[in-house]
Image (tube, rainbow, N blue to C red; front, side):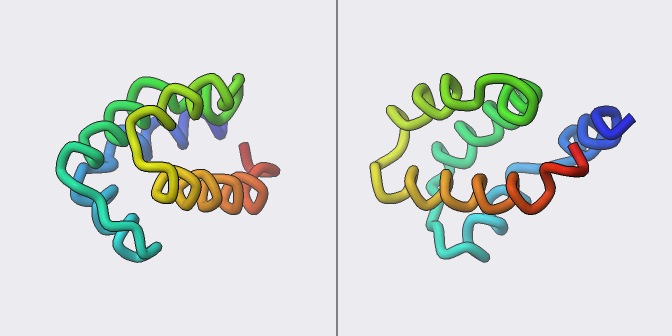
Length: 87
């Protein structure tokens, strides 16, 4: 049941939402980086939340500078721990 809610929410996320979320978390994202994150969110969200997220993050790490990637992963970990019981 939760999976359906999450899937429907993800379908509504826009590139602008990603850009604004990054800005709120002091991560300046280029248009290309927003496109990359949008791609991963829409195509790998189940693997990230329910599968082996490390494989996805290893692939993503190659596409971002190290400091920015580490900050994004830190934010993901924080939210994942906070909301894991709802997944």
